[in-house]
Image (cartoon, rainbow, N blue to C red; front, side, top):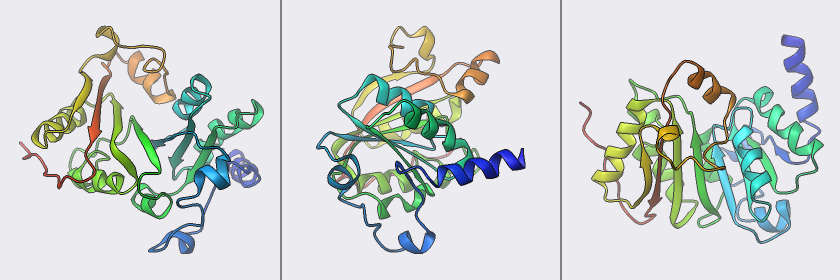
Length: 231
């Protein structure tokens, strides 16, 4: 297993569509592609959508296949996992896919205000004891406000009812516009070809009989957000 990981790390270093910036390049400073992803990386003016905590990149690649006129970037700190999606995109000659290996709390070093249209958060760690580490907490939504277009879309797809309920409460407290919301996606009738893309982890959760939840909402980039009270 260790040899396989090392081999993947070595190979991913050769992929032009994978960015692995050194910590010194992004800590309290802007990465060279910030504000220039369309012109310098994708070389088109199509909208850009992020997948945060992309894991093996199934959603990033799946979305990109279905939407060739949109650019997609998967972000994760685990390079060996990311290799799977990056290799698929390379082998299939996909030009609208990129990956960034970094921590999500450094995301504002990579993207400028208004550079991103939507964000997908798929099956993140629900962080039951530390709300400020949840990817839908006001802390992280504050990061997203600095790179999204006004009323940019946030998608959360998760097996965690607790994270779903928390996010729904936060959205309602801050009067953000909800476009779709369900505590059982595959029994809701809204699971279209996009929402039915399944990650490695989602398939495992479904095999255990866990319902999948989903919420899609708009983020007002000018609003000061409040945390819901923890029960």
